[in-house]
Image 1 (cartoon, rainbow, N blue to C red):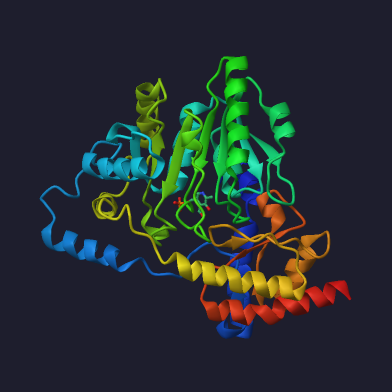
Image 2: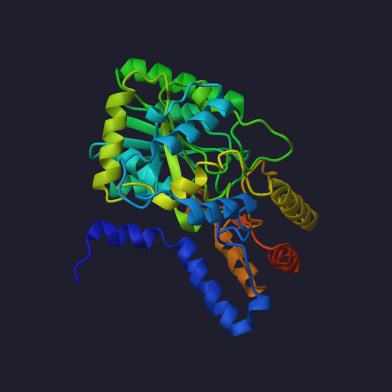
Length: 394
Ligand SMILES: Cc1ncc(COP(=O)(O)O)c(C=O)c1O
């Protein structure tokens, strides 16, 4: 069997989370399920809200004929209208159904956008720490990922960003609240990025797009308001999904939204819809489009995640870890107490706790904990966090 060399290389480089997943299965077999605390995956244990099941029942009992046929590749007009109305209410911008493409999750939206915007060798800016798949989405479409580091506070190095923006830069992916750090970029960071992209687009006579990947935007704590990059920058393409805010990762439903004031919107939209089709997604799942139409203002229980964030944050800081308190999502990204975070990850494994090394997210020296798990798993992991730190720092 011949596998493309690029794909082989990318598979090898992308294996951190998968390795943890496989190790988890092995450890559970060896030690028993109850003694392994798998905090490595962003696969929420929460069930979707009751309204989702109400919609599902209503759909099964009352759906109109033709509800499972092909449809326009951007999705049902009434679903796009509902999405546009909700996004307009959130952002204060006049989104309409013509700005929306329903997609097979946020992952499909990102792939469609990169494919539509990038010729081979064009550049996609990614801020580290990043969702590891971004690199491979870019590479699989023959775009060049350009990584910009953030400081310990997860604020991007804007001078480095300015240096790295080039006539070949087609897009910058901004993910807030962030996977893996849980950090939400501040309004001033967003203003500064928008100003820079505006200035450089004018200088190079190009359109540099800000792809705002927001699957966690509704999972925000402490009553924080979400600073929308769309309010600041007209070449923003919103990407999101209901994987996390409705707890539906397996059902593959999300959307992208073009900024209503972007002047070349109709042409770009045609290109995005074309890419949705020829990359083989064709359209987002019909049933899910029927269901999420009436769920745009529903979310899972954010208070539960906030309680877990507080529990984990207190556990880690009491034990002596250095960690920035997340503002949203359901991840924490503490500093490793030793420079090589693999040593810590292995020490945690010995105590039955699975986390992912920071190098999988472009920021070695840290590790990612997912707390979208049951509270008893967080409590079960707590002694392991203490013991591993003691072991390495004695
Ligand atoms: C930052 C980020 N973007 C995109 C995705 C993909 O989301 P989806 O399952 O909706 O494709 C994820 C999934 O974990 C994510 O964390």
